[in-house]
Image (cartoon, rainbow, N blue to C red; front, side, top):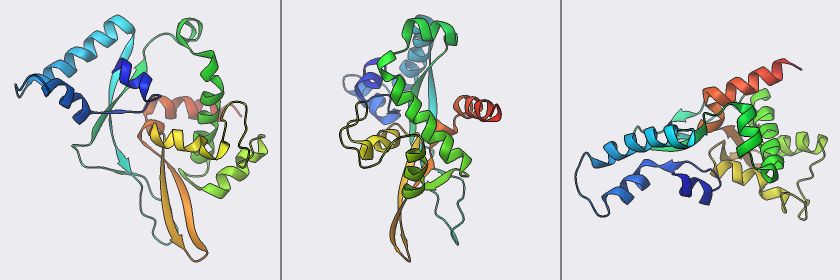
Length: 198
């Protein structure tokens, strides 16, 4: 979990991937569940991480242009993420990667914008709002994101956002919707607290 989370820039790790690693050399049926539970305990006790299970969501279909809540995928599509259990001050002082701060700020801004838009926003509307805070979609030499146009794709891979291409009267429209990580109680709680202050 630690290495895969680092290698995939925080993308959720599928249960089937973990099970495949475990059953590569050992064929006992109950072993994956036993080892995943043991890993949860060790990650919490040793590293201060909660190995949280998340259900993958799929984009909701819209009816008459009305956005609806993301639908849960089938029960077998479980994934895991690591969430720090450390005190925020300790995490900020000892663990937080200062070089990742701009990406975290971008993620928080995008998730906030989509939350304020009712959980779903078009690609054009998202970039219209991001332009108001100084980010231009067509900037291919940004000092942090390199190619700004690709920055939301990382949030899609990390399962903060869902991306859906819809056919409309004016051609195809790309829509972004909050995914399971953005809908997580911890993140949505922090988001609501922050928004309510302003």
